[in-house]
Length: 447
Ligand SMILES: [Cu+2]
Image 1 (tube, rainbow, N blue to C red):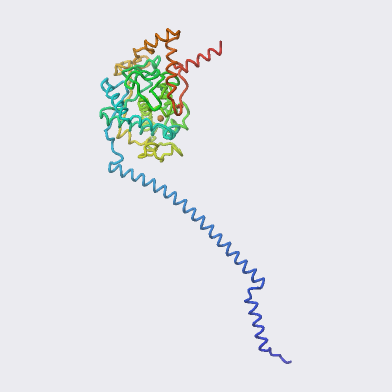
Image 2 (image 1 turned 90 degrees about the vertical axis):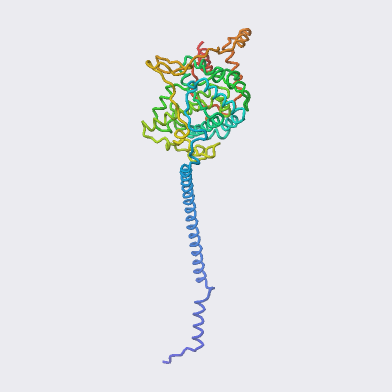
């Protein structure tokens, strides 16, 4: 049988056809395949991009963390460096000082202290200092764990300013428990011309008489509301071991040192009653030195009885009270710097508040006396009357009880100067105006 030979042309044609099929881009199958491949390619690319994005974000996050760590390490390093070279960790310009209770100063020392405060006032520096305790700074210095450290730095710098005026002056602390345990604290010698001046209404007597402030004449209304700090409060606080137990917002009221600190603020009244005006009364710094003294007792107790390191015991906090946040008003420091050992090692320390007992019946000051039964020092009672002679005559002539009329006058004079927030404080002592009116209201309710 004849095997027909394919024509060459036929072969060529077949080849052509085969090649055509193989190379033809236009067949639907090929197009489909190609498009599918293309889609896969896009998908792969997109996936790759996602991977890159995730990797990038992860890297960025890690970088931020690393940056923070480096920044912190740098900060610690700089601190160490400065400590080593003595630029930041130096003792204060005016030297180490020992703070004492106000009534333990000699008359000459007390006079010099008053003079230094007045010199600061005259130069305008007192008001600059007082104005730091105002507005936004107040928010990061109160209501949280930064309260104690911030005020420690604040009063230390204030004291330094006083000592630049007179290098022998110290900031005395006002131990208000010495007054709390009197029959009535408004009778304390402290509210006389030789000490802080009168406490009823505008300050007309004593070293700060007729001081002017951005919110008017300096005013007080001692014994108006809340309470001074009792020995019991201090004893209670010294049963705790951690800073978080005595600081806001974690402390319960009984051990809340910031809340107890609001007591004397409100008890003194006038400028002292509200946050933006308080530091314009010089008693502010003496009251805060006492709060700082209680905190220092607490820190010693942490070391000795609790085996807690007070220099690292800063409670967990974010925002304004975060440990590494720059200290409001004092950009050289961070919040955590307030709790370091540095202050009471290189700047100042405290002399203990006077004590007495059956055998040791002297408190070491003519302005203190020993309550032998309770074995504690209490303030001398002032001889000046609560109500001036002139006012007593005026009140009697107008058919008023001089003392009650005086309370009303003081209250209205001192309430005009307030600005800012009223300090959080314990309830009114029954010996205060608020305490008495509460009892009176309750009595009226029953009759
Ligand atoms: Cu304050």
